[in-house]
Image 1 (spheres, rainbow, N blue to C red):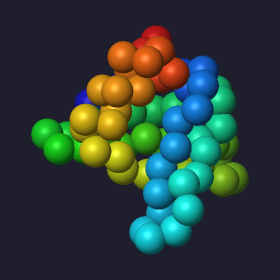
Image 2: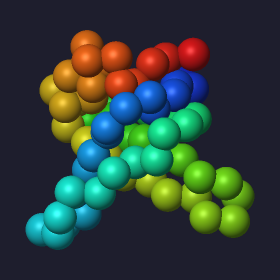
Image 3: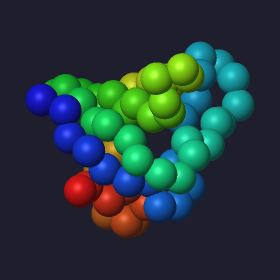
Amino acid sequence: MAANAKVTGNVEYRAGDGPLILIPQGPIEIQLAPDSAVLSWGDAGSMQTTAIPIAEYQRYLNEGVIQPD
């Protein structure tokens, strides 16, 4: 089940072995799995998705930079 949230601070992910990439502030959709959170953002023309470890997602929630709607 997907949930809506908002990025209000620095939320980063790593694509492969590359550098950290900042997720833009604004609305996101979240799908939780036992070991990861899948974050999606953007508009219909340029949707982007990434998966981050569930511990990292929890840290972002605790820091208040991801705020569930």
